[in-house]
Image 1 (cartoon, helix red, strand yellow):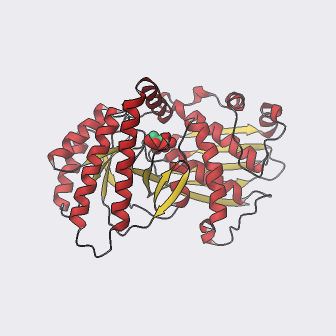
Image 2 (cartoon, rainbow, N blue to C red):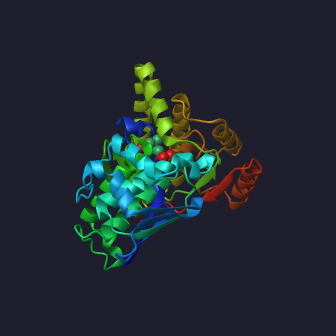
Image 3 (tube, protein in one colour):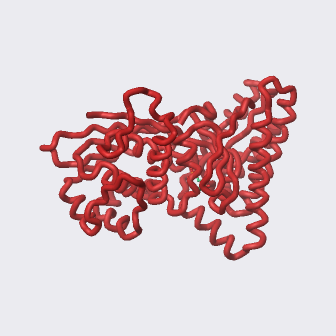
Length: 375
Ligand code: PMV
């Protein structure tokens, strides 16, 4: 039996980091996907295999070995989403030889622990081959880990004996209760990878569209405002977990100043959502609204710099786009990763081509992606 599930990446339009501290963020899915194919193997073949196509790594574990490592838990098998303890993560590390990861990808070992936790919790010890492939750059702020956890949870739940998702029709993912279950499991995977995620990434990847997210509660934003964003990848790798921890450390050193800045970011997110939600399809205020969003992006970026998550590569992109009178901000955890540049409707294709050429001459990679598709 075989099933394939896919989930989109995301951009955070406003409010990253602040959202970890209970403030509002606005995020949108993008049309770049991670796919997970899961094929159950016959009982005679006693291994669980994981193939990570994009980083060229394969793992194969005898089921008996996984049972041995998890023996302190009895069976982790569970029909409701359960968190993986730190102690269990440490045990799972015995199954993953971190030396097999290229230096730059060492942080990805936690993605394999997340796989093992979700797999054994949802499917128990059934032998299978799981193949992961992604259109998303890894660790670049576009939600690659969330898309991985969502697609993986969806594929596992689709083959679980206890959950029985209806996969008979393409639209099954739109059934809310099922999507919520996928989202909850994906969040457990994200916790293993990121330590203290807000949940915005897995929520937007599961449900798609443009969403507002605050303290674990997601609200869909129905917007008629066309949004064009240039996405520039600095190609500077970074670690979301470390950046989130650094912001928390700065907050404990400067509680008043940091709270004011996080609250200011929340005000920016709230204004973002008001503008795009109230924009009518035939609205004559398009360029005025675009100008407001550009200002909000500039302010958001200034605050992200102040809370300590910008990077020299991000600043180079900001300076370049500023010469074109275009507003930009980092998206995701920062410290490298990707930068968004708002492309208002009045900006011509020729201008965009020139900007892209200039940015790419620094070694950055530019692309556009469809915003707000299905989860
Ligand atoms: O860089 P990414 O895709 O991991 O996004 C992280 C977003 C943060 O707000 C920094 C963390 C979170 O969990 O919300």
